[in-house]
Length: 57
Image (cartoon, rainbow, N blue to C red):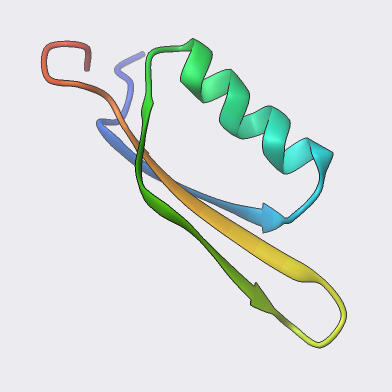
C-alpha cells in the first residue's frame, strides 16, 4: 500500500496521540510545522502534520 506523503493527525492530547505520532516517525515521517491545540470545552484536542521526505512515498 502506498503511503501518503502528507498526513494530519488529530485526537485527544493523551499518550495514545503521542504513540501514534511516534509510530509515524519510526516509519520515516517527519514533523511538519508546530503542533496545534484546541479545546472543545472538555477535552484538549491536538493536531500534528507529518510528511514523508521526497523519495520515500
